[in-house]
Image (cartoon, rainbow, N blue to C red; front, side, top):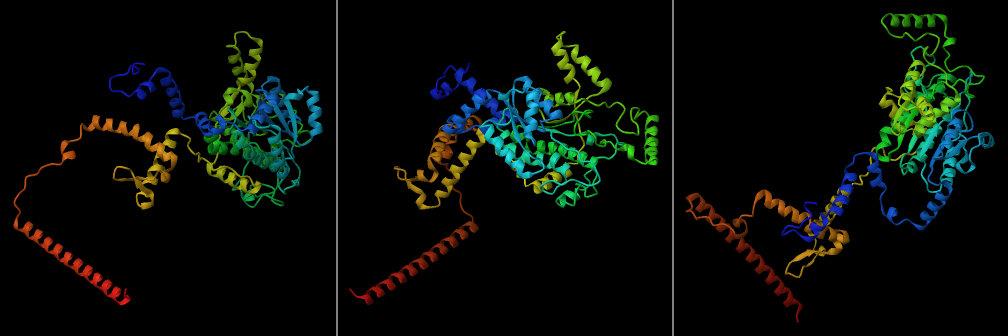
Length: 566
């Protein structure tokens, strides 16, 4: 505002530019440009002519999408027909803020469950997908693209899973072990197909229902272990049932698939979070006691099958740890004594939190406290609600969440990524190679391109034309309209600013630099005089040679002309 008053000599354009309304607008634009977070980067990346003048077809789709979805976010949940997936879908719909797409294998089962739970028909769309087939995954993504019109997906919750115990593996339609394909490989392919569209969302999240594989206590058997990925490197196809290349173990295959999901989440964040703004999370909702997936099947913790001498060795190690103050809540028969089973409803509520809670809008690996730690967190949360019963329940349920810091082998995570892409046929955008939409760099690029074209044109007569002042200039057609504008803008803005800065820093241009300078002539020494005489002699010799050659050429032309006759 202080600069708005026009001092003498200031151009009117500069004064107008510095007036308060424009100053405020420019400050906002510059602040947006300078912000180094993913939101600003996404805004500038997505901004373009289509934002200003949308095509009629896009306008029609937008109108249809608004009529169908309103302002609700779009969420996709795999395995939504039962278990935690069904509970998560019900919870999302209960908020009134989501339209949910249930990705399921059995559409009739999904429709029956939706009727039993009174899902609002306008806010729920079941779609068929068979995760045991890569072709079905691709077909599902195409159906989803048609169903969502031009709206981006805001939440992708990869929840579906199978557990296949037994002595022999079951094989998918693509020839892979069923557990590893359904739980991991098909979700890997689905994420690759849906990610480009999700990047257009204002708050996109990819949530992978992982397991406690990377965080389990040392005595839990079998452990998730991918080895050197020898089985995956060989294609992980029949008869190769395990990613590590060893013999099949149903419980270990399940845990390996969940570890792969956790590593996938970490790799997706490293490769794509900055350029897409998508939050990638792994959630471990807990050991679900009433899970239909485990009904009638051996437990995932098969420590009871260990020989007695192995359990004795483990107990010996634990006793040694207890004597120095560690492992007080650990025992040789399974998980830690503090771990508690959760209900399907609790697990569904935790999936809702990962999708809806603002704390989970960043990438991370999320788990929930159990036992006394959870009770203490809930009590602390209730103490600040002010007696609101509804707020008390919500805070108590969500207060126990915490972020896990897993220790992944980053090199192996990238190797898992590469081989999984090869096996599934997934294609991804170049990782960590965003093209900067920064306006400053766009302008600098235009200036550089125009200047390069001008310099190239100066080397050819075709690139020059008379300037009307007895000289030459670069033809406008060479640098195009953009270059002409750049010349005019730069000359009248940066050029003037540069001159002013030069005067301020260096002072006025010396008179000698404009009019020349006078140096007093000194007498030459003998050596200087001899060198000058030698140079003059060489000049004379060169002139004589040139005259001789010219005379010979003229004589040859005259003789040729006389032979031809008139």
